[in-house]
Image (cartoon, rainbow, N blue to C red):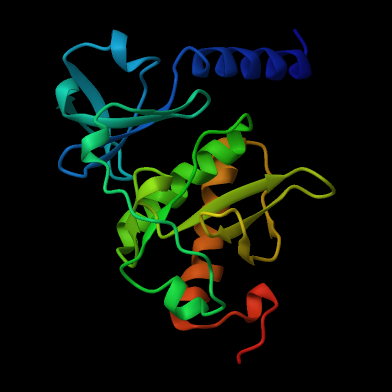
Length: 217
């Protein structure tokens, strides 16, 4: 078997083993947020294995404590609707600093048909939790605003951040950031980290909107 055929076979085997699992994001009654690999909550056992934070640590949680599950491909399933901290949507009024202020709740949609968007969004959620500047909303109904990780392969592979209000109006769109490489999932996660540092830590959080093409008023 030549080297090219060997490499292709290895890639197929790796992709096949990865697709045997389904990925999802779980929120529990104590507002815990976890990544997990379950195909369907209804068929899961009484205790569910989850990843803790962004590290390779795991623990089990009780199935009865699950408030919602957002599957990477199959959408959001809210189990305990009475545990959702719903808030009325607010339209963007032109004041970025107020609308995106520290302590606001942000929802990052994770369901997508593009696995780069899925894993980039997952990493964004982890960065938000680690940073602590905003609170992570479990669903859109809980959010003050929405933050999208958006990947595109048009031209050179790239990604950007898109902030929007709950009425669907885009209020900030970052510049394109390179998101190319051999290992797509790793590239998506690293891209999300770069975008967070460049446009949130060094941008939104300090009132610097030049990277979004907006001059300071």
